Image 1 (cartoon, rainbow, N blue to C red):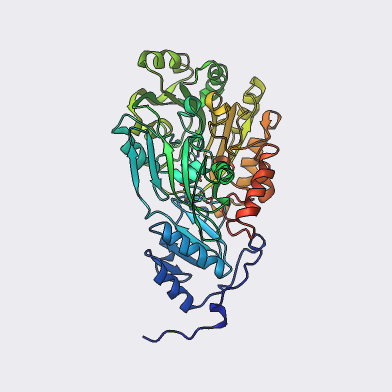
Image 2: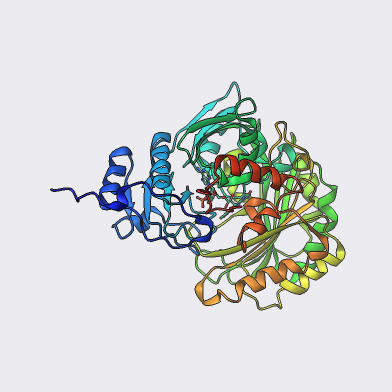
Length: 481
Ligand SMILES: Cc1cc2nc3c(=O)[nH]c(=O)nc-3n(C[C@H](O)[C@H](O)[C@H](O)COP(=O)(O)OP(=O)(O)OC[C@H]3O[C@@H](n4cnc5c(N)ncnc54)[C@H](O)[C@@H]3O)c2cc1C
């Protein structure tokens, strides 16, 4: 087979202002793609290739990526080669592990997928796990549970460890131990110059501060070392209450939640359950209120006692709260596992008042016919309100509650859903904290909305680090600023 003749476009080009460009005509030739293939161990797909769509498929199918080129990275060297190649050809770089948190289509960019990078090793003595970029939480939780340890996983263990942790990482153990980002020992990162750096409190501390909370704005993380906590089991689960008792349950939650110790993580969610076979009959097609509860203290009896005031807050449709292993925490939230189209938006609250609950009830009560899948209110505070041992850029420490609204992200409702979701959150505006958790930021109108999620001074500091390590904004596809 003869190779194509080199063309003008094989030469390195100057990176354009990628933040302003959504669709780029691929500035590279087939020869350049072959050169990239020879530099990496994983597969390389150019736009139009068979296999491209599967390689870049998202879990949240509301966003579908159409990159100019994709590399299925198998190791840090693959990532470094892919980043260098992209920069040399004037492309921005997007990264995806699971596709649980796509923000916008990486159209015309280089997409690096990390799901082949599956290494997990546990050091039980140091209570530390080293986790490669493509690993989902379940693998870490399973491996850690063998030693009576747990990671600070969120509501779904199907989510990627790296993406979740860089965006803060709020899980059921958060009030007890803090954000996942507060428990990172070191980060291996490839920056726009193609360098593989190791960040820690002692090595490149400013970049280490920024990446923990600044998400994917600084480069591609290839591995992360995280601390594990000594939690082998929990008293935990969830109770589904009937929608007609929504007011009683939400007001009971409002009174009860602030009385809880830090060992309890809890949230309450208004759910509109689909009329589908996979939904258990008592919930099928129903509006329900789901109380999520997790007690990580020593005695089961104490976990039971603390939950007791909520058990009869309304008519129970279904539920289980009891002793579980630390690798069974998906049973608390019962998040969907199969891919779905979702439109998401979150905000933080300084308080959950009687008026606030009434305002929310008026917006999302069972009598409202609106396209909303879920509104969840999570209790914050405890260790989530304290600075990390090694400070980081995670916002939201002074807030008391996180609210997250999710609606169907389907084209037919594309004009309605953002208005509904933002409208529902708007009913809580009087109690809104100015900051937002990056993992719950969801849809954003642009970089200014991302910048506003951080406390005063933090965004300016992040922007300085960004200007130093990514002055040409190569990494601008996640929650980019
Ligand atoms: C069902 C569900 C449940 C969730 N529950 C929680 C929860 O309880 N608590 C919570 O805090 N969040 C939660 N989230 C939000 C989730 O943590 C974020 O969406 C997170 O970004 C997902 O990471 P991912 O790698 O799985 O997704 P991806 O879509 O693959 O990645 C999302 C973003 O993470 C960044 N990223 C991923 N990998 C890398 C890398 N190697 N280097 C640099 N940047 C990278 C990029 O910016 C990327 O755009 C949930 C999301 C879903 C869909």
